[in-house]
Amino acid sequence: MGTTSSFFGGGGGSPLPEPEWLFQKSSYTYTFPYDGVVRVHVVGAGGSGGVQNNGYSATGGGAGGYSRKQFTVTSSTTATVTTGVGGARVGQGVQNADGNAGTASTFVLGSTTLTANGGTGGTRYGTTSKGLGGSATGGDINYTGGNGGARQGQYNDYAQATGGGAVNLFNLTTDGGSFTNAGRNAATGGGGVGGRGGNITNGGYYHITGGGGSAGPADDIPNSSNTSAANSNGGAGGARLFLFNGPFLDGQGGNPIRIYNYSISSYGMTVSPPSTIGIGAGSGGIAGWEQNVPGASVFIAQKAGIFGGGGGCYVGQHEGSSAGDATVGGGGGAHAFRQGDSNPQRFSGKGGQGVVIIEYIERT
Image 1 (tube, rainbow, N blue to C red):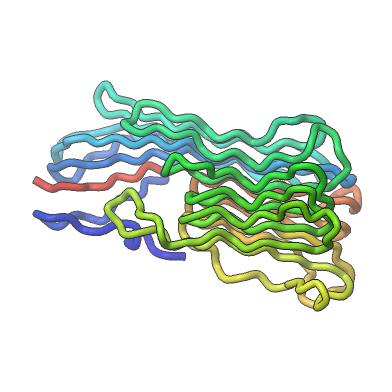
Image 2: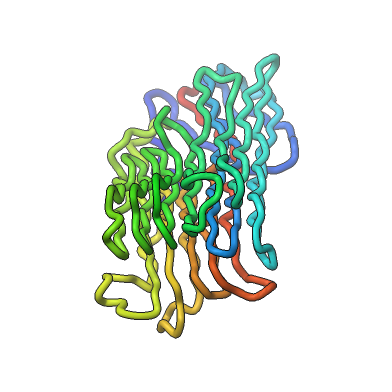
């Protein structure tokens, strides 16, 4: 993962301070340290993914909203800041449950209030809804967060787990990957700020897609109903100019991970995760049916990069598994499974926390 300094670059005139990332959960008073012009970026917290047993399907959580506004301030100017709390993951003895919603982040300066609402939690079996991105108000720019990926229909036994949505910084589609028609024992990647997680159309068994990147969506799996164990690559990273005076986000979307109990090499399957997910990218989906696979004692999807959505997780019969967590603003991935005991150790991905970012673009 890159550092926050890679987000930003200096401008002309007086040296600009590093942007401040404010994560305090309770409301408090912030005092600006310098005279000048600032951009304030407000990101709501993401919702966690849903959990579903018995081979049914669940959806990822929605990302928090995004609001941005420019202000002229002095070193005595104060504002009231509240940052949202990400939706807690569900699991630990829970056979089926909707995810938890994230809460709003707010920034109040004088008569102006920027609000970035939290994303809703992902859903379990029995509904056509999914985790929805939070709305935003009050800024010069206000974008609704990416949705969790959609599953096929209200009731199905396809064991689909979708990825969470990403924060929408560029007015793009930043949803988690979705299913159209079938796709059994399968999972999709989380969204990235540059595009959605990979979609699956007419999918077969153990199809998995990657997460969206900072500069583009993940690859899809189209019309592949007769193909087993297909997968797609994560979205590209590093090409999109970022908003905060900086050159670009560096996140390539996470590739999918597959673990199965036989013929691992014949399907090109992987039991070790790829490298850490970069800034702005979603994590890939993870799926498998584990029995005595070396190195596969735990199924844990990777955490998403900052602002990205967590990947979905499907597991056939295994305890100790988790969908992808979001870190900042994104929605957590969903978890679907077929078999297990009455106290399953299986978890959806948690929603990313909200943040307020203070960026000086000019010092006077």
